[in-house]
Amino acid sequence: MTLTTPPVQRATQSAAHLRHVDKWYGAHHVLDDVSLDVARGEIVALIGRSGSGKSTVLRVLAGLSDDHTGERFVAGAPALAFQEPRLFPWRDVRTNVVYGLTRTRLPKAEAQRRAERALADVGLADRADAWPLTLSGGQAQRVSLARALVAEPQLLLLDEPFGALDALTRLSMRALLLELWRTHMFGVLLVTHDVDEAVALADRVLVLDEGRVVHSLQIDGPRRPPGEDSAHTERYRAELLDRLGVHA
Image (cartoon, rainbow, N blue to C red; front, side):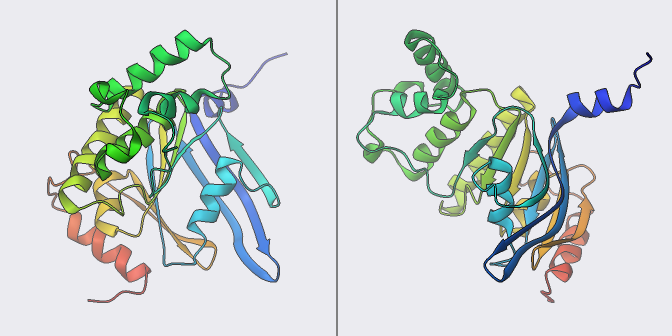
């Protein structure tokens, strides 16, 4: 029997996809025939007005919501980071990161080593024994990223991860995300309200409106590191704002 190669290539390159996903909350049609793809090594941003269904898409991909129709595929166990770090205040930083390995059942010593390596990746090797309440907002979000990435996921789901940070810390965290992404080449789905952030970080930007993906924009040469300008930035920004119904 001869096997065709395209399905094998898709299976090895895809971090996640949704196909014709519908979800209801009572009488409210939250997701309406949503299809999307995230490849390994690709950053996809999902933008839309409040209530458009962005966080619900993340919940479906994360496996936190299973009462939907349609197809969901995720390679391995996805990692998820939120706008709030959601650290356990009664556990030190190292133990918070180890929590990200709960599903792996690694020996304790190996889990500790991997947690310390993840903290080194985010520049916090010296804060492993610190308590979460002693951290700055940016440091706490770095710990949240370390906890998400310690299990070496193929898909990272980010729900407004930098929205609560000040402007300078936000830029620093964007640069850190890109550094980690280049090192590990996981797929990323980034939910954000910030059009400029989407254009700066993503390879593609999807616009969600009333539970439907209404537009997909390919970004040619994303500004990496963020803050680097490009000739097409304003055009991308204007196109996305127009799709969001925002007119300057």
